[in-house]
Amino acid sequence: MSQEVAAIYTGILEQVVRLEKSKKELSKQILISKDNIKKLDLVYKFLGYELNKHQLFEQAAVIALSNKEKFVINHLGCLYEPFGNGELIDQIRKEIAYTKRFMQVTEKARSEKDSTSFTERRMVQEISKFVLAQCRIYMQLHI
Image (cartoon, rainbow, N blue to C red; front, side, top):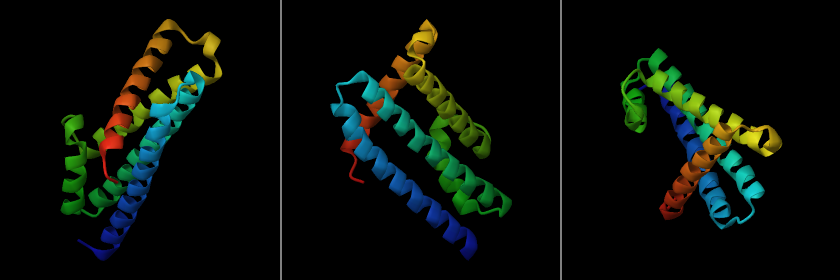
């Protein structure tokens, strides 16, 4: 592996670790929050960290693919393997698109609560459940 790609990938991994630590700290706040409005704000912030992580991995994938760095490609492939089959960059971009959509619906529920449809409210409920489940997992991790 070239030193430049290794340095860039190491830097990206360090940024991801910082994001993961922030998500763990935020998880505690989400789990203890009783106020639904505040909890929704925290869920939105959590999704923002998740989006940043996927965008960093997208940058790493583009660099690795353009430099044909098998180690980085394989490492990222292991991280995204549970998300389905297909090209690595496509899998990462799907996760980015899903996270952006989750954030859009959550933002609408935060700012335009009265104009959200039944489907959007249900979607926000499911997104919140998903984030709460992730928060419980983060609280068990030793990051």
